[in-house]
Picture 1 (tube, one colour):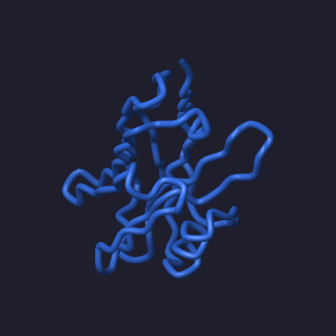
Picture 2: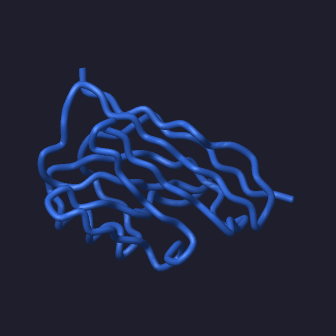
Length: 130
């Protein structure tokens, strides 16, 4: 059974940090991309960050560039999102997503747009509030 399971969400004050984890099971992503989307209340889902499986290059939406860092542990089949300097506008449900179509995924991330792709986790809530 193909599964992506997120963890690490929670409540944090503005300026704080959180680290999200995504454990993949039931498959090994040999090509494509894996990363994170998010959905804030009343808004569409948007791409946040991803890693290209083929070359390890990372991509970020402008809104999180310089604050978020994505990484991957291939041996553990796990992807991480280190989120620093969090802002209230980062409040959202964060989803781990994997897809074999890397160009489509990267486009969704760099344009911070929704895209109907791939395999999704169940999501983890991140709330940034005083």
